[in-house]
Length: 251
Image 1: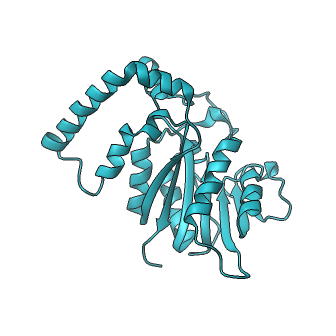
Image 2: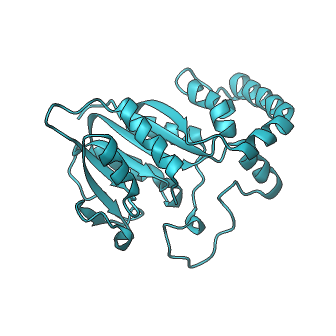
């Protein structure tokens, strides 16, 4: 479930990266996995947007003036025409999906050329999550899953941990460009773990980077900036990854 800090960061990212609407016009906005509609209300207060929403649990949505469509994102495409939206937001959803890359292809399809997509997901690369994974095999917010659980919006349905690189790679492969990373807040527990584990993290990174560059040659000029983010302050201490990109490909 998203929190006010996550929504505030999404709104600020949209304010910073979305071009101003033409005079008298509003940006067409789609919120995928809209929940109760909190993000839509915040964006409506901050920006000139005309919002639509989709979700699996439409009964939870309480913004009566915003049209909402029920969609099963694991099995169905987005029910919208190509190039319909200037802005697409997707907050705390991709970790609930069986195939997040399929959703990104759909997000690309419904986004106008030059449009903006903003996604958030739990940051499984902060120091706290790295230490938890090291000791238990489970990142933070991704634990053993109950069987037969059908509340898709709950944390018990976090089925797909997505490290930053793979989300950025999926966006680039889909056709988005100018991928940027923000975080919602600095997590104090991760700062403590980072201080304690700093020598191990630095030493491990140097060994990893040397092997990948010289032997496996997996780090290239195209992906190096996103690989390097995995040792950045934001990912080492941030609670939630807020990733945005522009549709730079053809219509």
